[in-house]
Amino acid sequence: LKGMLRVIRPAAAGMKARGGGSIICLSSIMGVAYGWDEHVHYSSAKAGVVGLVRGLAVELGRSGIRVNGIAPGYIRTAQLLSEKHSLGPEGAKTVGDIVPLGRIGQPDDIADVVGFLASDAARYLTGQVITVDGGLMVGRY
Image (cartoon, rainbow, N blue to C red; front, side, top):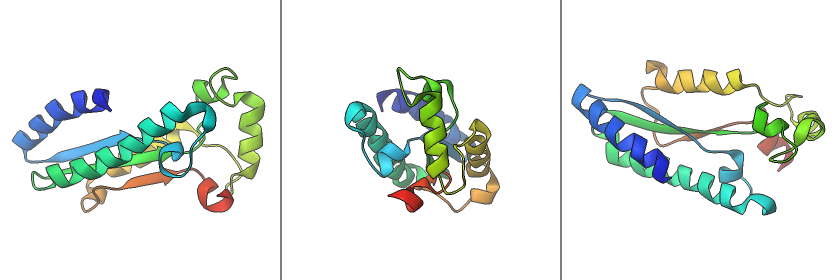
């Protein structure tokens, strides 16, 4: 959270000077829906991002700055495919089989939501963390 704030504070000052902007933070489904016993520190930090988004949305809203977040589910990244740090290739396949949309996400699935949140199409959206998980949380938990 400290790292995010170190970037957000000066960025917000510049946005205020220009009359507004959009800040987008990344959380995780482990920060909004459930924890993982082997990664308590990760779940805690990602839950903190949710509070950060909400607090900053209130703090910065009158300056024309929107603050939102994304809570990705399982996304095909090097970390996810690492057996040491996450599920590994076999685990990713297993999870993909239980996701209602039938697959784990791709980085572009998250990038598209970032693009939306940064755009004027999201002009009345602030303080929200959008779960992007192919329906995993509603279909499984």
